[in-house]
Length: 118
Image 1 (cartoon, rainbow, N blue to C red):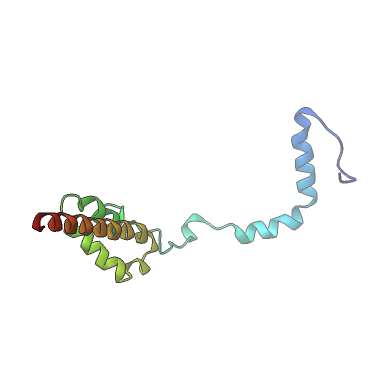
Image 2: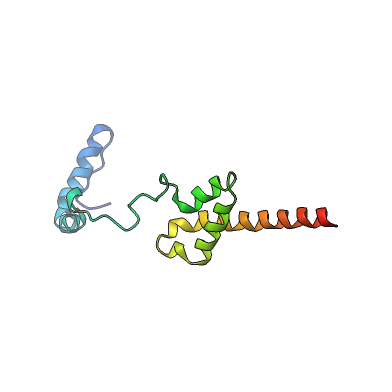
């Protein structure tokens, strides 16, 4: 421990911490001032804006509504392969889920049509 620190117990521990921080305050305060910003001064980031389609993104919205209208899965697949997710990387998972579901749906349709004709 530091040579200026004293052994304390109980409620005097707060005083020990205050004593140590006061001793080294000249080292800590300039950095604290540099990294502390006012809330009004904070800039909004590119990903602070909410996603379209009720906040869940086009991909997940298409995935969920695709069970009602499967053409939305193909629309999301087109967006996925067109690199739409480069605008906002948060869209990538939903678009990929829709693309995978569209592939599965196409496979099921192909099997059903093959069994009906043969």
